[in-house]
Amino acid sequence: MPFALLKHGLSADYPVEVDLPPPCDLKPRYDVVIIGAGGHGLAIAYYLAKYHGVTNVAVLEKAYLGGGNTARNTAVIRSNYLTSEGVRFYAESVRMFQELSNEFDFNIMYSERGQLTLAHTDATVRAFRQRAEVNKHFGGRTEMIDRQQIRELVPTLNLDPGHLPVIAGLWHIDGATARHDAVAWGYAKQAAKRGVEIHQLTEVQDLVVRNGRIEAVKTNRGTVQCGCVVQAIAGASSLLMAKAGIRAPIQTYPLQAMVTQPFKPFLDPLVSSSALHCYVQQTSRGEIVFGGGSDPYPLYNTRSTLDLKESLLGHAIEMFPFMANAKLMRQWAGMTDMTPDYSPIMGLSPVENYYLDAGWGTWGFKSTPICGKTMAELVASGGKVPALIAPFALERFSRFQQVNEMGATAASH
Ligand SMILES: Cc1cc2nc3c(=O)[nH]c(=O)nc-3n(C[C@H](O)[C@H](O)[C@H](O)COP(=O)(O)OP(=O)(O)OC[C@H]3O[C@@H](n4cnc5c(N)ncnc54)[C@H](O)[C@@H]3O)c2cc1C
Image (cartoon, rainbow, N blue to C red; front, top):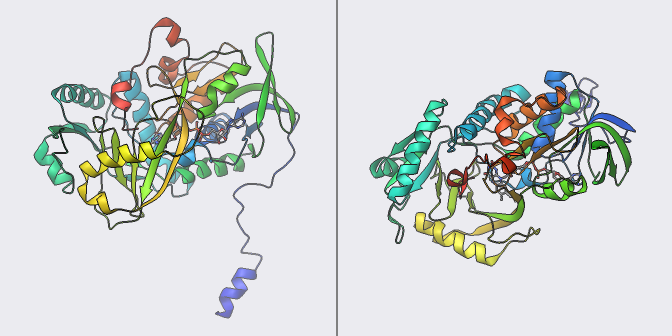
C-alpha cells in the first residue's frame, strides 16, 4: 500500500463520518414526539427542523430506522392519479423527489424511466383519457399511447396476453423509482444533524390522553411528556389510534412483492396492468421486481404465500414470456392500511395535538417528501391544515367527501 495513503487513512484529517449520533437517554419531555422512523416520520422531523426551527423533537421507532414498509416497497413514484386532489398532492411529491439528492447532498438514486399502464378494455381507455387530462392540467406529463407506440417503448412486452389483448396505454413520463433506504437515511441524517433525536428500539405502547388532549406516550423505555404527537406508523395505524380512542375506516392487508435473479438491462419503463393484477420493473442491479394487489383478506402477517407467487408470476409471464425461465430470489410482504377510497388520512384527529399520518396502503412511498413537508407545516402552526392535505382529513368519511383513487391505484402502486 502506498505510504501516503496509509498516512492519510490514519491522520486526524480523516475522521470517520458518523451518520447518526450514538444512542442517548430519552428526555422527560419533547415539544414534538413522532411515532415511527419510516420515511414519513423522518421526513416530518427533517422539515420541522429545516423550515420551522423546531428541533426539540424525538422520533421513536420500535425496531430499526427505515425497516418497516419503507424497506419493503417497490419504490414506484408517480402522480398519474385520478382526482384533482390526488394529482395535485402526488405531483408536488414527484417534484420534491427530483430535487432530493441535491437537497441531501446524498444520492437517493432517483431514476426517471416513465410508467406505462396497460388498457385491455374500452372502459379502461375512457378512464385513462380522464387521468391523462387531469394530470396535464396539474403539470404532469401523461398521455395516451397506442399499440404501436407501446411496442416501440417496450419491445419485449407481449401485447396479446391470453384473453386480454392490450389496446392502449397510459404513458406517464414522470414515473420513476428511487432507492428507498437512501430516502430514509437521507432524511434521518439531515434531521439528526439539525438536533432531532432518533430513538430506535423504542416502542410506543400506550398513549396518555387527558381532557381530550395528548399529554404523554408510554414506551418500553419509560413515559415521555409531549407538546404534541404525530403518528406515522403505516401498517399499524389503527392499533395505536384505538389506544387514543380514535376510530378510522382502515383495514390492514398484507401486500407481497418478489424479485428475480439479475438480467441484462431490457426494461426501462415501469409496466403495470390492473386487469392482470401485476406490475413489473427492472432495478438498476438488473433484477426484475414483481408486485400486485394486496392479499384478499385482512390480516397482520408478513409471510409470503405460494398462492400469490403462482397467480402473480402467471400474469407476469403472460406479459413477458421469456421470464418463464427466470429464477426467483426473494419474496416478502409488508402490512398495508387500506382506506375505503384508497387515499391517505392526514391531518387533525379528535384528540387535541395528536396528528395523523396514516392510511398509506400501497401508495405511501411516493408521498414521503410532500407528506413530510405538509405535516411539518401542520405541526409547526399548531394545527392549521395546509390546503394540499385538507381533502385527506379523517372526517371526510363522516361527511361523505371521499377522494376516490381506487381506479388509479389497483396494481400500479
Ligand atoms: C410490498 C410493498 C410494496 C409497496 N410498493 C409501493 C410503491 O411502489 N410505491 C409507493 O408509493 N408505495 C408502496 N408501498 C407502500 C409504502 O411502502 C408505504 O405506504 C410507505 O412506506 C409508508 O411509509 P411510512 O414511513 O409511513 O411507514 P413505515 O416505513 O412502515 O414506517 C413506520 C415505522 O413505524 C414503526 N412502528 C410501528 N408501530 C410502532 C410503535 N407502536 N412504536 C414505535 N414505532 C412503531 C415501524 O417499525 C416502522 O418502522 C408498498 C408497500 C409494500 C408492503
